[in-house]
Amino acid sequence: MKEGTYIKQPNRALQVYAIVFLIVLYLPVLFIPLFSFNDSIYVRFPMQGLTIQWYVDLWTRESVWAALQNSLTVGLWVSVISTGLGVVAARAITRYRMPGQSAIVTFAMLPLIVPGVIFGVALLVLVSRLGIPLSLYTVAFGHLIICLPFAIATLLPRFEGFDRSMEEASADLGENGWWTFWRVTFPMVAPGIVASLLLTFTISFDEFIMTFFLSGTDTTLPIYIWTQLRFPREFPAILALSTIILALSFVLVFVALWIGRLGVVREQVSATNAGS
Image 1 (cartoon, one colour):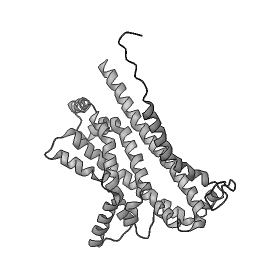
Image 2 (cartoon, one colour; image 1 turned 180 degrees about the vertical axis):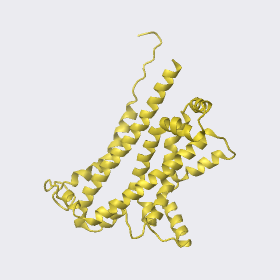
Image 3 (cartoon, one colour; image 1 turned 90 degrees about the vertical axis):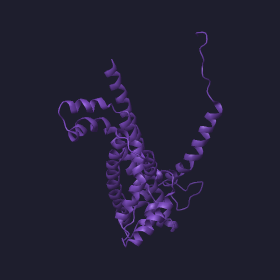
Image 4 (cartoon, one colour; image 1 turned 90 degrees about the horizontal axis):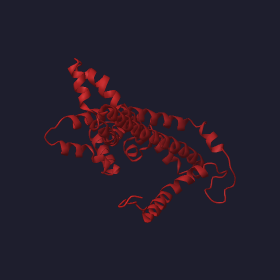
């Protein structure tokens, strides 16, 4: 070993803290899929046996499928609109300088720190004063307010790391701004856009507080789960449904993070090749 070489020692206290944190955070969640296979309506040890009847029972419930369709409809629309607005906002923030830009960005990010119940009550009062009936449209509007900051936060690094000389080269070759965006900018930021779509869809699909205040007779899946918790005999089926939602949410989030990381790696490789 060369003289003066410093070897960084692992921080044992930090490692122990991280392990304890993960156990406290995820151990209660692991009980949900475990008891979804329990052959009893009571959540207790020892388990009575293993069964998949609670999953089979979900297929016969029309109310579950109606709530799922509502959640998918709202989630898809919110993810597309919030990502589209996020692309415009991220591009404007990184390409232009305007008076009060920091204040505007901070205002756009407020839903990340303001409690959802505050926004829920405020929007409920607003739509009531305007005479707008509660429906999936009001739910989607509330979800859009929550998802837009996540879309902007996901897309900003993509536009900040984008090489503007490629756009300038496209303009020098005679392309207008619209075709430059679709042929040059969009392919480069596509991983961030896909990651934003997946992340905002997951957030909208799982959102409860805003939906609770703004939903009418058409309920989404989280609201359906909450209403069924009042009936003890429905609890095992709710555990099975929650397990499915939990698994799909984890998959979507991990895919979104993987796609976003893949885009960063591609940019680094492109920059390295361009520099060489």
